[in-house]
Length: 185
Image: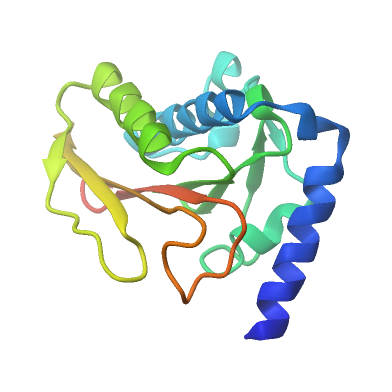
C-alpha cells in the first residue's frame, strides 16, 4: 500500500509540475463543475460523451493514459476525458454507459462540491438531496437523485481534505462526483 501511495504522489507531483500547474484552484473548482455538467448530460441522455452534441464534446478532449491512475479501480480501460477549462486537472471517466465520474485534486472540497451540486440543480430542478452520509474514510459526502424520463439517476459527491483522514496520506484534497443511471435504460 505504501508503494501505491508513493507512486501516486510521484505521478501527481509530475502532473502538477506541468505548465498547466499555473491553473488556479478556482479554475480547477469551476472545471470540476464543468466536468459534472458533462457527466450529467451523458447520464441524462444515457449516452457516451463521444456521442453528445458537438458543443458539449468541445469542452473535453481524450485524456492521456497517464491520468488513468485516478480512475483505474472503476474504469481500467474505458474512455477518460480531460476537461479543457481546467486542462490536466480534471478527469472524466466513463466506466459504462450511464456510469460517469469526475475526479480532481487540489481545490477546497466543500466549496467545490457545493458549486458542482448547484450546477446540477440549476440544470435539472428534478434533482433533490439523497441520503448519502459521510463516513470515516470520506468525511465529506452528499448526494442528489432524480427520476428523469423514467430513469433513476443518482449522483454522489465526495471528498477529503488533506490531513483529515489518517488512512489517506495525500497532500492535496481529493474530490469525486459519480453519476449512476439505474433504470430506464
